[in-house]
Length: 276
Picture 1 (cartoon, rainbow, N blue to C red):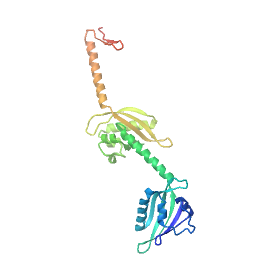
Picture 2: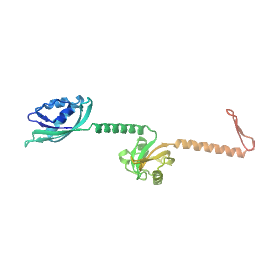
Picture 3: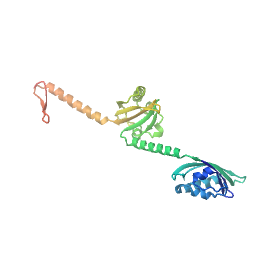
Picture 4: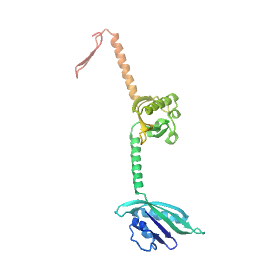
């Protein structure tokens, strides 16, 4: 959206009409003689200090210059642009000229901002979900894992991302069972909820209730798997204890000739044994 040529030795900046329009400057007719300070003052006030530092650094080292900042559009709103230039040095290393072009990157910056915001929201959500949250590619390699996954694996993310369950779990049979279930879900393209036994690094036996779904690309093709798993070890223990108590009660009721009943007075429901 514009070009410039800055004669550093005389501090004269030649600008074309497109750049003058982009900066909201009045044409000086001669396309030369403009001071750099005039251009800098047209930049968003918050971006001016960084712009001055970037220009100073480019002059000191010479060569390529790339910097982003905001300028006011003809509609009055601030838009992001990227300045790309080249500082030419003389034989003694002193900066002489600084030509460059200005590129409109506002749409790209807005897209990047939306992407960063979505990634931040996703990261916050993943960490807030209780239990273990993860994503895997089609080969079963871990792509992401929350703090719950890190605690379960017992290693930092940089050590487990890119690895498969058999490579991470001490129990190879458990790892292979998880991969088999994942492969089945990816092949079917259907969401499944299943119970899995995956032990902690300290050897503690643990049961997990996992909800897994295929991960698809923009074209709808399955490219991996996403899942969330909750530790239901305590719940399983309580259920087992209840089943044991119920079985003992059943055997005791069968073994006695006494009449046994249980009257639930709230709704009048009565349970009795064979003797009664």
